[in-house]
Length: 144
Image (tube, rainbow, N blue to C red; front, top):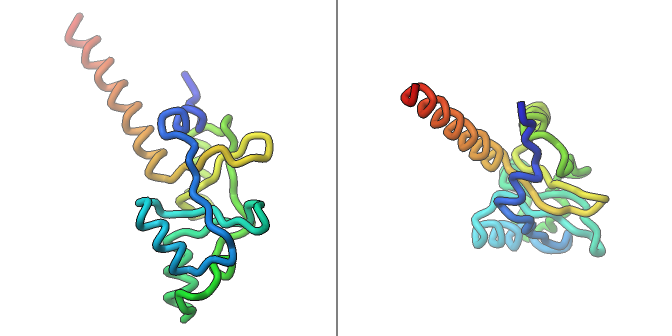
């Protein structure tokens, strides 16, 4: 059985990762997420990745904790980061996301972020694999 790794997802998806400075406002972060149709941004401090900010962080740490949208992103980001590598299996990453109750995981290679996967990316990948398997089995059965 072939083990599918996160590298396969990033080959197809690409390695673009959006970042925002920790000094930026929460409003700027939300605006950037909406403009790019993404659910998370990496947060940088002095050029180094310091955390991640997600839609869920906004809901929990702005809306429920009565912060304003002018608050700096660093106040609502999740840190330290939970990361995976290019060699992490898709199943292992899904289990990690489920266990940690997170939806976005940066993928690192030699200490550098090379991409980001969401739970949606993993589900889409798994679904595509199952479709191929079903088609293969269907072709095998009907050919025989």
